Amino acid sequence: MALVPMRLMLDHAAENEYGIPAYNVNNMEQIQAIMQAANETNSPVILQASRGARKYAGENFLRHLILAAVETYPHIPIAMHQDHGNAPSTCYSAMRQGFTSVMMDGSLEADAKTPASYEYNVEVTREVVKVAHSIGVSVEGELGCLGSLETGMGEAEDGHGFEGKLSHDQLLTDPEQAVDFVEQTQVDALAVAIGTSHGAYKFTRKPTGEILAISRIEEIHRRLPNTHLVMHGSSSVPQDLIELINKYGGTIPETYGVPVEEIQKGIKCGVRKVNIDTDNRLAITAAVREALAQNTKEFDPRHFLKPSIQYMQKVCSDRYQSFGTAGNASKIKQVSLDDFAAKYAKGELSPTI
Image (cartoon, rainbow, N blue to C red):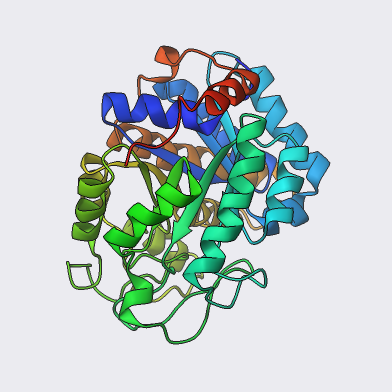
């Protein structure tokens, strides 16, 4: 199976009421871990790359690593997704590189730091949708800014995000505005702000409804029952990995992520794509620290990279099982980008408001 539009997967997930973890990738070991987990659980795959990842790995290296995954696992549908595109030009360059899905994050201006106006967000997202849909590429938009309801602060990671104080309204997606946004832009998926943030330091305590507004997802889904919702910053920050890292020299303070059971509530309310990066970073870091500490004479990088694949694979397999993704890869029939372009042109994939 070749690379497929992300919309194909999200439609299947909606029809069968499950969610799909979208894993950020930067290198070969991460892609191997994800694909081994997907193969083990028969799960469809969303491999996503940030602007930072594209710069770090190199455009050609990253593209060919993902194409290698397609060749190695031809029975698994894979979507190649641009995460947090800061401007239309970023999304267009991703499409030229073969990405089958892009995110136009117009919640921030092109500098990826300044909160944007609603009008700006609609304009740039609509522009990207028009181009992307003409060639069958899926589009994710974002409404509201990622940040902490606990502190009121925005967050920045990998060069993306606002670092100052945000209003409560900016930190939560407005359900009525979401309806207007989807109607005006025709996005395939909508990332919503509910108090989640990137990185390991999301919450200083186990999150409750005050600082993790899963109820906001319910409100949006009620108004947009046929729009695929996306949860960003949804790593669960496993405590056993934190403990292992700290056991072998790390100094990560007490911190909490998004509990898997809360993500499962979101999936029941229309969340189809769940972004996960930090959990995999923690797994890799724990494996590397442990391997280096246990054999201080070892200098072959394979000594600590092999365990990092195994540790990350376990995290990915757990998420595939927990989100109901497992068992669905073989049920998704391939549809090409050209076929999707024709469907978009006929209006067959227009959102139902």
